[in-house]
Image (cartoon, rainbow, N blue to C red):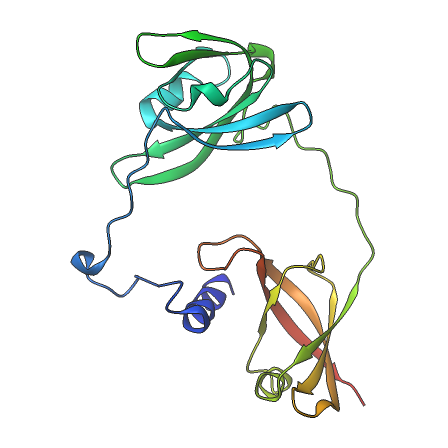
Length: 227
């Protein structure tokens, strides 16, 4: 289902979002290199901020829980204050991609170094996304929601026939798997036609390089046509 949605998204959103899977290596534009030991982004919340730092494979291993608490920061150190949080993202320079592993800790102090500054983790706060020593708070369950949405005739008919098993929608309604979509056929010139269908959301993608920010890809299964 995920691969199917990716292919459909590539077709609908091209050329802004390009699928390079069928191109020769020399035809694919080079991805900008990621600078390690540089603050790449900051999110502010409450009294403190959370900073993001890329780190090579070898350096990343040294900072696992129980390892060294010193973090070298070559660029962006002026954004940091004691009490802020720092997330280290493991980066593989050979493929120019992140591995998906992260380490997060609270900064107790930082001081100038020969190059840039050195920050220090509070060892009692350090955790990785692999062992999840500090697990996120469980999200409360919510009741099933019903979302009524307009659908153009050509898209509505494909969904009603069971051919189009997805919806690309602005993610402004808190869509979740198990929710119900009421698809109502709608023509801009004449309005609603009176035709409609009920569908269940079976899968959802909200963050992907194939999606425009703020949008969601919904996998759907038609339940019934409305009278």
